[in-house]
Amino acid sequence: MNIPYTSFYVRTAMYIGGALAAFVLAGAMSLGLIAAWELQGYIETRHSTLAEEAAQVLAAGGEERLISWMSNEASIPENVSVYILNDDSEDILGRKIPEYYVDFIRESVIGSPGQEHDNYQPVRLAPMIIAPDGKIYAVLIIPKGISLWGSNATIIGLLIVAALVIASVAWLIARTITRPISELQLAVRELASGDIDTRVPAVIAERKDELGNLAADFNIMADRLQQLIAGRENLFQEMSHELRSPLARLQASIALAAERPNMDIRDQIEREIARMNHVIGEMLRYSSLGAKVSNKRQLMRVNRRLAGIVENEEVEAVNNGCRIELDSESGLAVIGDPELLVSGFENIIRNAIRFAPPETAVEIVARRQSSISDEADKIIVTISDRGPGVATEGLEKIFEPYFRMANGSDSKHKDSTGLGLAIVKRVFSHHGGTVSAKQRSGGGLTITVVLPAAVLD
Image 1 (cartoon, rainbow, N blue to C red):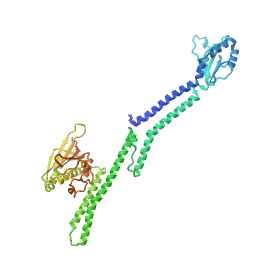
Image 2 (spheres, rainbow, N blue to C red):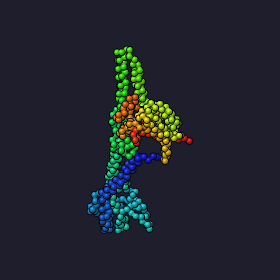
Image 3 (cartoon, helix red, strand yellow):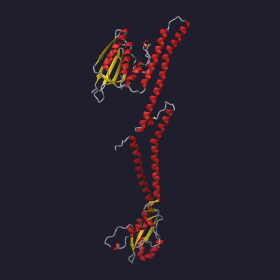
Image 4 (tube, helix red, strand yellow):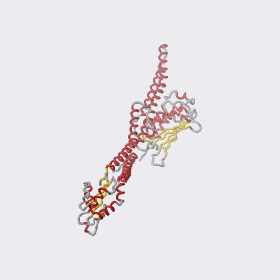
Protein backbone atom coordinates (compact mmCIF):
# COMPACT_ATOMS: atom_id res chain seq x y z
CA MET A 1 0.00 0.00 0.00
CA ASN A 2 1.39 3.40 -0.98
CA ILE A 3 1.38 5.97 1.82
CA PRO A 4 1.32 9.63 0.71
CA TYR A 5 4.36 11.26 2.27
CA THR A 6 3.02 14.78 2.70
CA SER A 7 5.03 17.58 4.21
CA PHE A 8 2.94 17.44 7.38
CA TYR A 9 3.61 13.70 7.63
CA VAL A 10 7.33 14.27 7.11
CA ARG A 11 7.40 17.04 9.70
CA THR A 12 5.66 14.87 12.30
CA ALA A 13 8.00 11.96 11.53
CA MET A 14 10.98 14.29 11.90
CA TYR A 15 9.75 15.45 15.29
CA ILE A 16 9.33 11.89 16.54
CA GLY A 17 12.65 10.75 15.04
CA GLY A 18 14.39 13.82 16.44
CA ALA A 19 12.89 13.14 19.86
CA LEU A 20 14.14 9.56 19.81
CA ALA A 21 17.60 10.63 18.66
CA ALA A 22 17.72 13.38 21.29
CA PHE A 23 16.67 10.92 23.99
CA VAL A 24 19.32 8.39 22.96
CA LEU A 25 22.03 11.04 22.76
CA ALA A 26 21.09 12.81 25.97
CA GLY A 27 20.57 9.48 27.74
CA ALA A 28 24.00 8.26 26.68
CA MET A 29 25.61 11.50 27.79
CA SER A 30 23.82 11.48 31.15
CA LEU A 31 24.72 7.82 31.68
CA GLY A 32 28.33 8.63 30.94
CA LEU A 33 28.40 11.58 33.34
CA ILE A 34 26.61 9.70 36.12
CA ALA A 35 28.77 6.61 35.65
CA ALA A 36 31.95 8.71 35.70
CA TRP A 37 30.80 10.38 38.90
CA GLU A 38 29.65 7.22 40.65
CA LEU A 39 32.54 5.03 39.50
CA GLN A 40 35.29 7.51 40.30
CA GLY A 41 36.09 5.87 43.65
CA TYR A 42 35.82 2.39 42.14
CA ILE A 43 38.28 3.22 39.34
CA GLU A 44 40.72 4.84 41.74
CA THR A 45 40.56 1.81 44.02
CA ARG A 46 41.06 -0.62 41.11
CA HIS A 47 44.16 1.27 40.06
CA SER A 48 45.52 1.63 43.58
CA THR A 49 47.95 -0.75 45.38
CA LEU A 50 45.23 -2.04 47.72
CA ALA A 51 45.28 -5.59 46.28
CA GLU A 52 49.11 -5.68 46.39
CA GLU A 53 49.12 -4.51 50.00
CA ALA A 54 46.54 -7.19 50.86
CA ALA A 55 48.79 -9.81 49.24
CA GLN A 56 51.77 -8.68 51.30
CA VAL A 57 49.74 -8.74 54.53
CA LEU A 58 48.41 -12.22 53.68
CA ALA A 59 51.91 -13.49 52.94
CA ALA A 60 53.29 -12.08 56.17
CA GLY A 61 50.57 -13.00 58.65
CA GLY A 62 48.02 -15.23 57.02
CA GLU A 63 44.27 -14.90 56.97
CA GLU A 64 43.94 -13.61 60.55
CA ARG A 65 46.37 -10.78 59.92
CA LEU A 66 44.56 -9.96 56.65
CA ILE A 67 41.23 -9.80 58.52
CA SER A 68 42.73 -7.43 61.10
CA TRP A 69 44.30 -5.27 58.38
CA MET A 70 41.06 -5.05 56.39
CA SER A 71 39.11 -4.10 59.53
CA ASN A 72 41.43 -1.42 60.91
CA GLU A 73 44.25 -0.39 58.58
CA ALA A 74 43.21 -0.66 54.91
CA SER A 75 42.58 2.66 53.14
CA ILE A 76 39.22 2.14 51.42
CA PRO A 77 37.17 5.00 49.88
CA GLU A 78 33.66 5.52 51.29
CA ASN A 79 31.85 4.94 48.00
CA VAL A 80 33.23 1.43 47.39
CA SER A 81 33.05 -1.91 49.18
CA VAL A 82 36.05 -4.29 49.20
CA TYR A 83 35.47 -7.98 49.85
CA ILE A 84 38.16 -10.68 50.34
CA LEU A 85 36.49 -13.85 49.08
CA ASN A 86 37.55 -17.43 49.79
CA ASP A 87 36.92 -20.49 47.64
CA ASP A 88 33.33 -20.66 48.88
CA SER A 89 32.65 -17.10 47.62
CA GLU A 90 32.31 -15.93 51.22
CA ASP A 91 33.82 -12.75 52.62
CA ILE A 92 36.53 -13.43 55.23
CA LEU A 93 35.07 -10.59 57.36
CA GLY A 94 31.70 -12.37 57.43
CA ARG A 95 29.87 -9.64 55.53
CA LYS A 96 26.95 -10.66 53.41
CA ILE A 97 27.41 -10.06 49.71
CA PRO A 98 24.42 -8.53 47.89
CA GLU A 99 22.25 -11.29 46.49
CA TYR A 100 22.33 -9.99 42.91
CA TYR A 101 26.15 -10.37 42.90
CA VAL A 102 26.24 -14.01 43.99
CA ASP A 103 25.95 -15.69 40.60
CA PHE A 104 28.19 -13.05 39.02
CA ILE A 105 30.90 -13.72 41.65
CA ARG A 106 30.61 -17.48 41.29
CA GLU A 107 30.93 -17.43 37.51
CA SER A 108 33.24 -14.49 36.83
CA VAL A 109 35.26 -13.92 40.02
CA ILE A 110 35.86 -17.21 41.83
CA GLY A 111 35.12 -19.74 39.10
CA SER A 112 33.68 -23.24 39.23
CA PRO A 113 35.37 -25.91 41.39
CA GLY A 114 38.14 -27.84 39.67
CA GLN A 115 38.92 -25.13 37.13
CA GLU A 116 42.22 -24.38 38.91
CA HIS A 117 43.55 -27.78 37.79
CA ASP A 118 42.86 -27.16 34.13
CA ASN A 119 45.53 -25.93 31.80
CA TYR A 120 43.19 -23.06 30.85
CA GLN A 121 42.23 -20.31 33.26
CA PRO A 122 39.53 -17.82 32.16
CA VAL A 123 39.90 -14.08 32.72
CA ARG A 124 38.80 -13.12 36.23
CA LEU A 125 37.26 -9.76 37.10
CA ALA A 126 39.07 -9.52 40.43
CA PRO A 127 42.74 -9.84 41.37
CA MET A 128 43.73 -13.10 43.11
CA ILE A 129 46.06 -13.30 46.14
CA ILE A 130 47.57 -16.57 47.43
CA ALA A 131 48.26 -17.42 51.07
CA PRO A 132 51.40 -19.30 52.21
CA ASP A 133 49.32 -22.44 52.61
CA GLY A 134 48.17 -22.20 48.94
CA LYS A 135 44.64 -20.95 49.58
CA ILE A 136 43.45 -18.50 46.91
CA TYR A 137 41.51 -15.35 47.77
CA ALA A 138 39.82 -12.87 45.44
CA VAL A 139 39.90 -9.13 46.08
CA LEU A 140 36.46 -7.92 44.91
CA ILE A 141 35.86 -4.17 44.64
CA ILE A 142 32.20 -3.11 44.19
CA PRO A 143 30.93 0.50 43.92
CA LYS A 144 28.26 1.30 46.50
CA GLY A 145 24.76 2.17 45.28
CA ILE A 146 25.25 0.44 41.91
CA SER A 147 23.91 -2.96 41.02
CA LEU A 148 24.31 -5.00 37.88
CA TRP A 149 21.21 -3.19 36.60
CA GLY A 150 22.47 0.31 37.32
CA SER A 151 21.76 2.74 40.12
CA ASN A 152 19.00 4.97 41.39
CA ALA A 153 20.92 7.98 40.11
CA THR A 154 21.02 6.43 36.64
CA ILE A 155 17.28 5.76 36.65
CA ILE A 156 16.53 9.29 37.90
CA GLY A 157 18.83 10.76 35.26
CA LEU A 158 17.13 8.83 32.47
CA LEU A 159 13.71 9.89 33.76
CA ILE A 160 14.81 13.53 33.80
CA VAL A 161 16.16 13.25 30.26
CA ALA A 162 12.94 11.57 29.09
CA ALA A 163 10.84 14.28 30.75
CA LEU A 164 12.89 17.04 29.08
CA VAL A 165 12.66 15.39 25.65
CA ILE A 166 8.92 14.76 25.99
CA ALA A 167 8.34 18.35 27.15
CA SER A 168 10.36 19.72 24.23
CA VAL A 169 8.50 17.61 21.66
CA ALA A 170 5.16 18.47 23.25
CA TRP A 171 6.05 22.17 23.01
CA LEU A 172 7.06 21.78 19.36
CA ILE A 173 3.85 19.93 18.52
CA ALA A 174 1.76 22.50 20.38
CA ARG A 175 3.55 25.33 18.58
CA THR A 176 3.47 23.85 15.09
CA ILE A 177 0.22 21.87 15.13
CA THR A 178 -2.09 22.74 18.02
CA ARG A 179 -1.66 26.51 17.82
CA PRO A 180 -2.35 26.76 14.07
CA ILE A 181 -5.41 24.54 14.45
CA SER A 182 -6.65 26.76 17.29
CA GLU A 183 -6.10 29.86 15.14
CA LEU A 184 -8.02 28.24 12.28
CA GLN A 185 -10.85 27.25 14.61
CA LEU A 186 -11.06 30.78 16.02
CA ALA A 187 -11.06 32.29 12.52
CA VAL A 188 -13.85 29.94 11.39
CA ARG A 189 -15.96 30.86 14.43
CA GLU A 190 -15.45 34.60 13.89
CA LEU A 191 -16.31 34.30 10.20
CA ALA A 192 -19.41 32.26 11.06
CA SER A 193 -20.45 34.96 13.53
CA GLY A 194 -20.46 37.54 10.72
CA ASP A 195 -17.01 39.11 10.95
CA ILE A 196 -16.06 38.93 7.26
CA ASP A 197 -12.76 40.73 7.91
CA THR A 198 -11.45 37.70 9.79
CA ARG A 199 -8.25 36.18 8.40
CA VAL A 200 -5.81 33.54 9.61
CA PRO A 201 -2.45 35.18 10.52
CA ALA A 202 0.07 35.29 7.69
CA VAL A 203 2.67 33.41 9.75
CA ILE A 204 0.38 30.35 9.56
CA ALA A 205 -0.90 30.86 6.01
CA GLU A 206 2.69 31.05 4.72
CA ARG A 207 3.68 27.65 6.15
CA LYS A 208 4.79 25.12 3.56
CA ASP A 209 2.59 22.25 4.72
CA GLU A 210 -1.03 21.14 4.76
CA LEU A 211 -1.97 23.45 7.66
CA GLY A 212 -0.46 26.39 5.79
CA ASN A 213 -2.36 25.42 2.63
CA LEU A 214 -5.57 25.11 4.64
CA ALA A 215 -5.03 28.53 6.22
CA ALA A 216 -4.26 30.09 2.82
CA ASP A 217 -7.40 28.49 1.34
CA PHE A 218 -9.44 29.84 4.25
CA ASN A 219 -8.12 33.36 3.63
CA ILE A 220 -8.90 33.04 -0.09
CA MET A 221 -12.41 31.85 0.79
CA ALA A 222 -12.87 34.75 3.22
CA ASP A 223 -11.68 37.23 0.57
CA ARG A 224 -14.10 35.74 -1.93
CA LEU A 225 -16.99 35.90 0.53
CA GLN A 226 -16.16 39.50 1.32
CA GLN A 227 -16.09 40.35 -2.39
CA LEU A 228 -19.39 38.56 -2.98
CA ILE A 229 -21.09 40.31 -0.07
CA ALA A 230 -19.70 43.68 -1.14
CA GLY A 231 -20.77 42.96 -4.72
CA ARG A 232 -24.29 42.06 -3.63
CA GLU A 233 -24.55 45.23 -1.58
CA ASN A 234 -23.34 47.34 -4.49
CA LEU A 235 -25.70 45.48 -6.78
CA PHE A 236 -28.69 46.26 -4.61
CA GLN A 237 -27.63 49.88 -4.28
CA GLU A 238 -27.24 50.21 -8.04
CA MET A 239 -30.52 48.43 -8.64
CA SER A 240 -32.32 50.74 -6.28
CA HIS A 241 -30.76 53.65 -8.16
CA GLU A 242 -31.85 52.17 -11.52
CA LEU A 243 -35.41 51.61 -10.29
CA ARG A 244 -35.73 54.99 -8.59
CA SER A 245 -35.88 56.94 -11.85
CA PRO A 246 -38.67 54.93 -13.53
CA LEU A 247 -40.57 54.85 -10.23
CA ALA A 248 -40.31 58.62 -9.95
CA ARG A 249 -41.52 59.01 -13.52
CA LEU A 250 -44.40 56.62 -12.81
CA GLN A 251 -45.41 58.64 -9.77
CA ALA A 252 -45.26 61.83 -11.81
CA SER A 253 -47.34 60.27 -14.59
CA ILE A 254 -49.95 59.02 -12.13
CA ALA A 255 -50.12 62.44 -10.47
CA LEU A 256 -50.44 64.12 -13.90
CA ALA A 257 -53.17 61.67 -14.88
CA ALA A 258 -55.06 62.54 -11.71
CA GLU A 259 -54.84 66.26 -12.48
CA ARG A 260 -55.63 65.89 -16.20
CA PRO A 261 -57.99 62.94 -16.68
CA ASN A 262 -58.25 63.59 -20.40
CA MET A 263 -54.45 63.21 -21.03
CA ASP A 264 -53.41 59.83 -22.43
CA ILE A 265 -50.21 58.82 -20.65
CA ARG A 266 -50.74 55.08 -20.82
CA ASP A 267 -47.85 54.58 -23.28
CA GLN A 268 -45.41 56.34 -20.98
CA ILE A 269 -46.55 54.30 -17.98
CA GLU A 270 -46.19 51.08 -19.96
CA ARG A 271 -42.66 52.07 -21.04
CA GLU A 272 -41.59 52.74 -17.47
CA ILE A 273 -43.11 49.49 -16.24
CA ALA A 274 -41.37 47.59 -19.07
CA ARG A 275 -38.07 49.23 -18.16
CA MET A 276 -38.49 48.25 -14.49
CA ASN A 277 -39.34 44.71 -15.52
CA HIS A 278 -36.25 44.61 -17.74
CA VAL A 279 -33.99 45.87 -14.95
CA ILE A 280 -35.33 43.30 -12.50
CA GLY A 281 -35.04 40.52 -15.08
CA GLU A 282 -31.41 41.40 -15.82
CA MET A 283 -30.55 41.44 -12.14
CA LEU A 284 -32.14 38.04 -11.58
CA ARG A 285 -30.27 36.71 -14.58
CA TYR A 286 -26.97 38.12 -13.32
CA SER A 287 -27.54 36.65 -9.84
CA SER A 288 -28.50 33.23 -11.21
CA LEU A 289 -25.30 33.10 -13.25
CA GLY A 290 -23.34 33.76 -10.06
CA ALA A 291 -24.61 30.49 -8.59
CA LYS A 292 -23.04 27.19 -9.53
CA VAL A 293 -25.73 25.81 -11.79
CA SER A 294 -25.34 23.01 -14.29
CA ASN A 295 -25.50 24.36 -17.84
CA LYS A 296 -26.55 22.41 -20.88
CA ARG A 297 -23.77 20.45 -22.53
CA GLN A 298 -24.44 20.60 -26.25
CA LEU A 299 -22.30 20.98 -29.33
CA MET A 300 -22.54 24.50 -30.75
CA ARG A 301 -21.14 25.63 -34.10
CA VAL A 302 -19.82 29.07 -33.28
CA ASN A 303 -19.46 30.19 -36.92
CA ARG A 304 -23.09 29.33 -37.68
CA ARG A 305 -24.42 31.01 -34.53
CA LEU A 306 -22.43 34.17 -35.24
CA ALA A 307 -23.84 34.26 -38.78
CA GLY A 308 -27.36 34.00 -37.33
CA ILE A 309 -26.69 36.79 -34.83
CA VAL A 310 -25.31 39.06 -37.60
CA GLU A 311 -28.41 38.42 -39.71
CA ASN A 312 -30.71 39.30 -36.80
CA GLU A 313 -28.80 42.45 -35.85
CA GLU A 314 -28.52 43.85 -39.39
CA VAL A 315 -31.71 45.87 -38.93
CA GLU A 316 -30.41 47.57 -35.79
CA ALA A 317 -27.06 48.25 -37.46
CA VAL A 318 -28.79 49.87 -40.47
CA ASN A 319 -30.92 52.03 -38.16
CA ASN A 320 -27.74 53.16 -36.42
CA GLY A 321 -26.04 53.96 -39.76
CA CYS A 322 -23.32 51.30 -39.48
CA ARG A 323 -22.75 47.82 -40.85
CA ILE A 324 -21.60 44.42 -39.56
CA GLU A 325 -18.74 42.47 -41.14
CA LEU A 326 -18.20 38.81 -40.21
CA ASP A 327 -14.99 36.92 -40.97
CA SER A 328 -15.18 33.40 -39.53
CA GLU A 329 -13.50 30.10 -40.13
CA SER A 330 -15.73 27.10 -40.67
CA GLY A 331 -16.00 24.20 -38.28
CA LEU A 332 -15.62 26.23 -35.08
CA ALA A 333 -17.30 24.21 -32.34
CA VAL A 334 -17.59 24.47 -28.56
CA ILE A 335 -19.44 22.49 -25.90
CA GLY A 336 -21.90 24.43 -23.74
CA ASP A 337 -25.31 25.98 -23.37
CA PRO A 338 -26.18 27.48 -26.78
CA GLU A 339 -28.76 29.90 -25.36
CA LEU A 340 -26.31 31.40 -22.85
CA LEU A 341 -23.44 31.57 -25.34
CA VAL A 342 -25.58 33.23 -28.02
CA SER A 343 -26.88 35.76 -25.50
CA GLY A 344 -23.30 36.57 -24.52
CA PHE A 345 -22.24 37.22 -28.13
CA GLU A 346 -25.44 39.18 -28.80
CA ASN A 347 -24.82 41.46 -25.86
CA ILE A 348 -21.30 42.33 -27.05
CA ILE A 349 -22.40 42.88 -30.67
CA ARG A 350 -25.35 45.06 -29.68
CA ASN A 351 -23.09 47.20 -27.51
CA ALA A 352 -20.69 47.58 -30.43
CA ILE A 353 -23.55 48.61 -32.75
CA ARG A 354 -24.82 51.11 -30.16
CA PHE A 355 -21.45 52.86 -29.92
CA ALA A 356 -20.39 52.54 -33.57
CA PRO A 357 -20.39 55.90 -35.44
CA PRO A 358 -22.28 56.14 -38.75
CA GLU A 359 -20.52 54.88 -41.88
CA THR A 360 -18.30 52.53 -39.82
CA ALA A 361 -18.27 48.76 -39.46
CA VAL A 362 -18.54 46.43 -36.50
CA GLU A 363 -15.96 43.78 -37.35
CA ILE A 364 -16.34 40.22 -36.05
CA VAL A 365 -13.46 37.77 -36.53
CA ALA A 366 -13.60 34.13 -35.37
CA ARG A 367 -10.59 31.85 -35.53
CA ARG A 368 -9.37 28.57 -34.11
CA GLN A 369 -6.01 28.72 -32.33
CA SER A 370 -4.12 25.44 -32.17
CA SER A 371 -2.27 24.65 -28.96
CA ILE A 372 1.36 23.54 -29.01
CA SER A 373 0.97 22.01 -25.54
CA ASP A 374 -1.33 19.31 -24.21
CA GLU A 375 -4.11 21.88 -23.64
CA ALA A 376 -7.17 21.94 -25.87
CA ASP A 377 -7.34 24.29 -28.85
CA LYS A 378 -9.03 27.66 -28.38
CA ILE A 379 -11.83 29.41 -30.24
CA ILE A 380 -11.07 33.15 -30.33
CA VAL A 381 -13.77 35.65 -31.32
CA THR A 382 -13.03 39.39 -31.51
CA ILE A 383 -15.72 42.11 -31.86
CA SER A 384 -14.30 45.52 -32.78
CA ASP A 385 -15.93 48.92 -33.30
CA ARG A 386 -14.83 52.48 -34.00
CA GLY A 387 -16.74 54.03 -31.11
CA PRO A 388 -15.39 56.30 -28.38
CA GLY A 389 -13.58 53.39 -26.74
CA VAL A 390 -12.77 53.03 -23.05
CA ALA A 391 -10.00 54.61 -20.97
CA THR A 392 -7.19 52.29 -19.94
CA GLU A 393 -8.28 52.21 -16.30
CA GLY A 394 -11.78 51.16 -17.33
CA LEU A 395 -10.91 48.20 -19.58
CA GLU A 396 -11.45 45.69 -16.76
CA LYS A 397 -14.16 47.64 -14.94
CA ILE A 398 -16.57 47.59 -17.90
CA PHE A 399 -17.32 43.97 -16.96
CA GLU A 400 -18.40 45.00 -13.46
CA PRO A 401 -22.08 45.63 -12.68
CA TYR A 402 -23.32 49.20 -13.30
CA PHE A 403 -19.98 50.58 -14.43
CA ARG A 404 -20.33 53.98 -16.10
CA MET A 405 -17.78 55.47 -18.49
CA ALA A 406 -16.90 59.10 -18.07
CA ASN A 407 -16.18 59.74 -21.74
CA GLY A 408 -19.20 61.67 -22.85
CA SER A 409 -21.01 58.57 -24.12
CA ASP A 410 -23.33 58.12 -21.19
CA SER A 411 -26.25 59.10 -23.40
CA LYS A 412 -25.72 55.77 -25.14
CA HIS A 413 -26.52 54.06 -21.82
CA LYS A 414 -29.95 55.55 -21.33
CA ASP A 415 -31.60 52.25 -22.30
CA SER A 416 -28.93 50.06 -20.63
CA THR A 417 -29.35 48.27 -17.30
CA GLY A 418 -25.60 48.35 -16.58
CA LEU A 419 -25.49 44.56 -16.26
CA GLY A 420 -24.96 43.52 -19.88
CA LEU A 421 -21.19 43.03 -19.91
CA ALA A 422 -21.22 41.71 -16.34
CA ILE A 423 -23.61 38.99 -17.52
CA VAL A 424 -21.35 38.37 -20.53
CA LYS A 425 -18.36 37.78 -18.26
CA ARG A 426 -20.27 35.26 -16.14
CA VAL A 427 -21.65 33.45 -19.19
CA PHE A 428 -18.23 32.80 -20.68
CA SER A 429 -16.67 32.03 -17.27
CA HIS A 430 -19.30 29.31 -16.80
CA HIS A 431 -18.01 27.72 -20.01
CA GLY A 432 -14.35 27.79 -19.04
CA GLY A 433 -13.66 30.85 -21.18
CA THR A 434 -12.55 34.44 -20.73
CA VAL A 435 -13.58 37.84 -22.04
CA SER A 436 -11.36 40.92 -22.15
CA ALA A 437 -11.28 44.38 -23.68
CA LYS A 438 -8.51 46.51 -25.19
CA GLN A 439 -8.23 49.78 -26.99
CA ARG A 440 -8.29 49.47 -30.76
CA SER A 441 -5.57 51.02 -32.84
CA GLY A 442 -7.04 54.02 -34.65
CA GLY A 443 -9.82 54.42 -32.08
CA GLY A 444 -12.55 52.23 -30.78
CA LEU A 445 -12.74 49.09 -28.67
CA THR A 446 -12.00 45.41 -29.24
CA ILE A 447 -13.56 42.76 -27.04
CA THR A 448 -12.00 39.29 -27.22
CA VAL A 449 -13.78 36.09 -26.20
CA VAL A 450 -11.73 32.90 -25.72
CA LEU A 451 -13.48 29.54 -25.38
CA PRO A 452 -12.09 25.99 -25.26
CA ALA A 453 -12.68 24.27 -28.58
CA ALA A 454 -14.75 21.11 -28.65
CA VAL A 455 -12.75 17.91 -29.19
CA LEU A 456 -14.47 16.02 -32.02
CA ASP A 457 -13.64 12.41 -32.92
